[in-house]
Image 1 (tube, protein in one colour):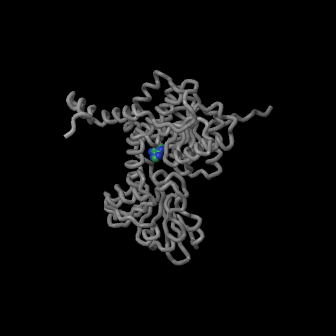
Image 2 (cartoon, protein in one colour):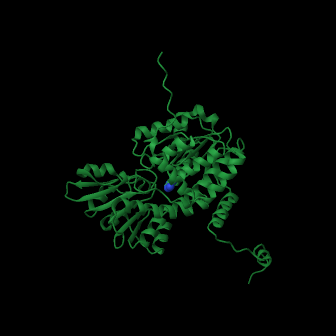
Image 3 (cartoon, rainbow, N blue to C red):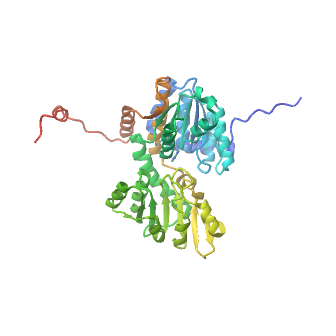
Length: 425
Ligand code: ADE
């Protein structure tokens, strides 16, 4: 008799990497007091008992702490990567070996594998989707309408995913509630700004080991992520140029002390370029044509669409790997352009993503957003929901306490004053 092969419940690089992953996950956990507190409550209350969760996130030490908290809460959770280049293989191994959480993610997986893993996440028949970029939800809506009856809702991590959900809502195809984690104050003020600011430059530095002081660094996009990158680049001594399409943000960048100009002009001046706009082909053929020899180009926006690499490839006579995650395009004109991380998220491709201390708050929002959906199952109309104000404030209070910082409080007199309209000048 031929034995039927048991279907493997994970797809990772090497299960032998688990001990390294465990050490690193625990290290990250030290900086995640909010999520730790949530996990402790989940272990007792089991809010996700009987709930299937498919999470599509960057498989990092921080995500591991989220997945472990969800499992402690009783969830039947699987995890896939939200980007082909962001997976930390030791983390994936540890989640499988030590926590019994099925993971489908391998650093450097090709696009076909990535999309197959999205299908596996849906094969899990999720009640809750935790998405980062909206790929699982978009695939569900496009290809698996028959599974909609299982869905309680989704939580979305990132600006790009929220923009996609808003488009789905406009098109009338979002038929379940979605929690907008990105716009929680304890998420985007910290993760998008300080997280992206630090981790993007960490990626640039790890990949190239260049000195930023004295260089001209061009940041495309002055949203929260762009603000963070610009601020931190200035802190390291770079001359920062910002490009924007939004007039208000352009004024803000100018008043923050940065030079603001169109990419067509900035392209001639920059030594390093970082795109964080969420839109496609922000750096394209006409820009490569005028860049300096040796210019370094990378992206910290969610998808690998911001840099038109096809246009660059078409101009190149040779592409060679010069360092880890760093490729040099030698152009037929004799000039070279350097691209980090294949134009994918540089902070996750070439470094380790945002530090744990900010992901603590982002993932506290994810966990509490998912819990909110479960608690309100059947009560929420299709739509995009903010994380409740009280939840956001509670996350901030726990974080502040863990940081050893105390708040001031209003006196009775101040309370009366602030609630009254009668006393003016
Ligand atoms: N997105 C940015 N940084 C991240 C991290 N460290 N873990 C998970 N998702 C992220």
